[in-house]
Length: 339
Ligand SMILES: NC(=O)c1ccc[n+]([C@@H]2O[C@H](COP(=O)([O-])OP(=O)(O)OC[C@H]3O[C@@H](n4cnc5c(N)ncnc54)[C@H](OP(=O)(O)O)[C@@H]3O)[C@@H](O)[C@H]2O)c1
Figure 1 (cartoon, protein in one colour):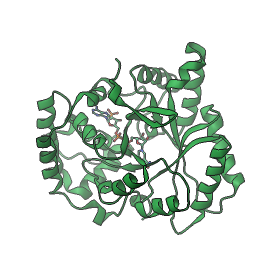
Figure 2 (spheres, helix red, strand yellow; figure 1 turned 90 degrees about the vertical axis):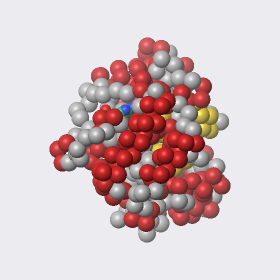
Figure 3 (tube, protein in one colour; figure 1 turned 135 degrees about the vertical axis):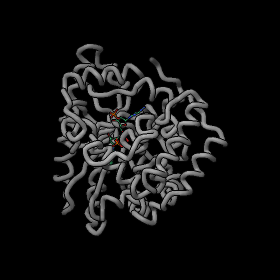
């Protein structure tokens, strides 16, 4: 399987990425037991199918180590040049507190070592408490490490528009922010997209298929509860669905998506991903990959061949309008992590 040219984005002058990124939170526990040998074999499958870009974090269990081992196996079996085709975006999620150059550098060095890279493609920084202004020091030191060659590009995750603006005004060049964005959670449309448009910042989105809830598997099904929600991802997004409007409205969304999906000969998930991918400033949608457990490569590839028309968008937006306003309820992007 190869993906069409439009599946890729020249994100930065040096990084051409696949617009569906493989999310590695799913290897961190709580999504089923991962066997690292199978996981790495499966990573070859993803890359060979054209899904060349990985999203991970320092705290996603063995994710950074899997990237390191995958890279070594790529070199051993295909030669070093083959690495040019693989991008790995990590995160640093420190505890708040005083930030010195040494603290920042020591942590960046850990990711460099685990991922077995000389320079991190993208460092997506997360910060838990805006009252603690040390995040600006952390970013300042990361910018120094960027100049020194340890980081290629600086990015954020779960920052709201107000703090993205503070950081931008402090002169720190941010290339992307990673946020929740889906047909259920449309908060980025309130302020974030507009700010990113003005400052040439891309969004990478997660939760776009709501842990798998946005699929045929849940169409016409009774409301899943407790043990039915078998991954932490499903639990997370079932809570979002509850806040958004509940299971009955979600069924209405699923049947609307199904009618659109049938019209185009694709799946509900394809429509859900395509809709977000077409939003301004969205660089890519991250879709979680339970490596070696389940796989949707062939289906997800179809996202790149579907075009939603005005009638499709109207139908989807009509359902969205019946939902509660999550911006009012939760706040801007990432505020759910800071309550
Ligand atoms: N920055 C942050 O705070 C943050 C937070 C959450 C996630 N993330 C990132 O985003 C990634 C995605 O995680 P997520 O929790 O948001 O999960 P998600 O992508 O919404 O859901 C992933 C699950 O959706 C199902 N799925 C995928 N493609 C499908 C298809 N074509 N048809 C039907 N089902 C399909 C699979 O379920 P099955 O495996 O059950 O088949 C898969 O495990 C993470 O790995 C991480 O990289 C970041």
